[in-house]
Amino acid sequence: MKIFDAHSDLLYDLYTKKIKNIDNRFLDYHVPQLQSSVIKGSIWTMYSPDDFNLVEAVKIALAEIEMEYLPGFQVILGLEGLRNLKKVEDLDILYDIGFRHAMLTWNEENIYATGVKGDPNRGLTSEGRKLIRSMENLDMIIDVAHLNEKSYYDVLNYTNKNIIFSHGNLKSICDHRRNLTDEQLVALREADGLFGLTLANNFVSKDPKEQDLEHFLNHLDKAVGIMGVDRVMFGFDFMDYLSEFPNSNISDVSDATKAYRIIEGMKKRGYLEKDIKKICYDNFYNRYYNKIVNI
Image (cartoon, rainbow, N blue to C red; front, top):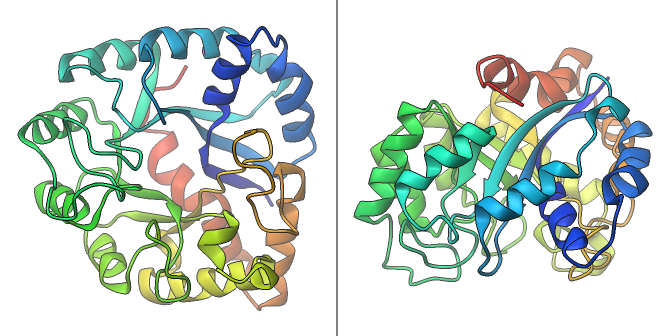
């Protein structure tokens, strides 16, 4: 049994370490973890929490990657937030480099849309609609994670093509601004989108004693109940390698080497093997990997 992780900030980690003159981050840290993990595919994203040259950053990160050390590992290149995409036309540059996925925002407001920290009455902009049209034409994955509710619904009312919500949990279980309401999940299901569950501990529970696998699986159970078993996946968002977010994942699945515990937990809860396979890998891989052109 293997897992496709629909959200990893690996590219951002490689970029930020390299500009701090830390060499061989991919080989020294990420390769040993992934070689010892049930995770066999991922969307590797360039996260944009602040301003920098996006094209330069992704080129620096990609130069650090040596995929021969991860034979068979399936990668889609992605963008977590587009604050650093200065104009829609620049998306073509990133597409030519190999990027096939993007979120319009991180938590901020930008020229395309509004994240969860932004004005709740501000949604998708005219430039955002132009961007989505470009993503549709390029057959890219449109990721609605991090959008505020107005932007979220604006996107779903504009297009149902290649929609995912890569990483978050259920607001009805844990009232975090990045988690989705049950109504948002229903809208995602109606758009035939995929919902990715995250291991970020404060998305699982506000109570530190409940930031564990069992309470994460409660989110999984309810997500499957709303979305159906064919529209749920995982977007773990491991943060063990991001110094600004120390110890930010659930206690018993704190990094990629421990992801096997999720499969064990699903088996204990009575999930059928065919459904575990769907949620862990096939729902995302079968829908997107074979149709998305990769590096």
